[in-house]
Length: 343
Image (cartoon, rainbow, N blue to C red; front, side, top):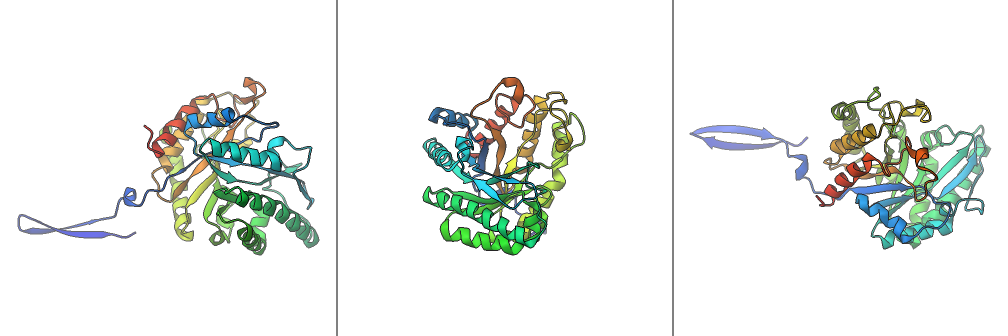
């Protein structure tokens, strides 16, 4: 840390004052006040997209899904059986509608693994299969990277939560990033899982250090705001050191909380069909997150998880990740508004 020293004469005595510059003195960069969009099964209207502006959302993550099978190398995308919002045509229209509403874009291709769900446990048994996976995954990523460039998308993510290949096949990712930069002129990130970002060795090749920030904070069903802030403290320190190590800003490519008891702890172990609804905890957890990060110069912002354009029935979403029609909406709107000068 750089220290400044001043000599101040007081009544004939020289006083030495030593202090460090306040973090707020660093140049202010607007945060990415983002929302992750749930791909709609059918077309939406401009009015539906514009509802996000009520939360002062300035960025949206648009996620054109691909699909794979557990233990198999093949990846398929943009086929007619997918929802409209997952296909190329839907992705293009969602980008256009977000633009009309004054929002910026992160295009974030994401593979869904049948039989596992997320990509974190995905692995293959032999080099032949890995080469096939690399070929398919590159085709998928480069397809949407070219699309992102043609539509002037501001930020592109080259993958999401692939813990094993991200750690064990660094040469592939460096090659892929180089190929993406040939067809896409914007900024690049990668969405690493909260327990995996420290194991990636190729962060120097991207522009933002992407973290899907679902950290367990407090092992209590109903913690207070101060307990939640205290839970964030060691993580804030770790992420600050991570940012300094790579000399790049940290971006929460995903973040958020379910609206139920225990959602700020080991949430992946909870059965949301069995746990009581707790909107207050979700709201407090968002507030503690903003209190912990919004003033940090190395924090670029984040994309909360998640926003639906169509909801089948209200009771289905009472403990879901979405903050829609819940107390957390007001917290997000307040903090996102403050970050862009709206009080």
